[in-house]
Length: 216
Image (cartoon, rainbow, N blue to C red; front, side, top):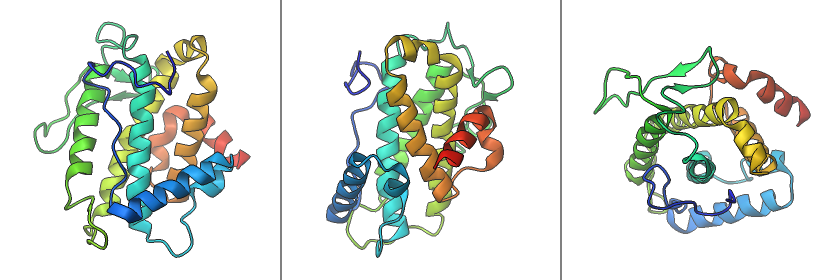
């Protein structure tokens, strides 16, 4: 199954793609991302375009990375089950528990697929909330917008960490490792450019992250 395909839409964990926020401006910035990615220059693809608003750029890219992780994880859902992955982990030293601060206030231990399901539900709720991700051109972003974005990226990183530690051999078998690596390079360079993930959070993939940063 190709990572570029839509996978099994009946599986709840995998979502249909979200559209870029903020009306025409969002669509315009999305075209810029696609054009710079097409050139193969990932460093250029993550930079804030001259004259553009930082929050608009963060918003459009947040939707884009949410879609990318959805597609990647959607490919693996038949292999990432409560039986194979009873906890959301990234190797033996790192285990993630779920809490959203609203419906689940105390962190709970869940299987990897359940964690990803909770995560995608939570991110989708943030993206659909116009008080956080405005859809109308010129509508203000909230004062805590970057904090919300940082939490989204921190949690999306955990999905990458789980994939690399628990399912990389399956990705290799599917001959999709080049696509996974390109997606993660793009993700890493973007989060590094805007300091979206604390260094301690990157520990499960520290060597990979450092090799990407040094190479670019």
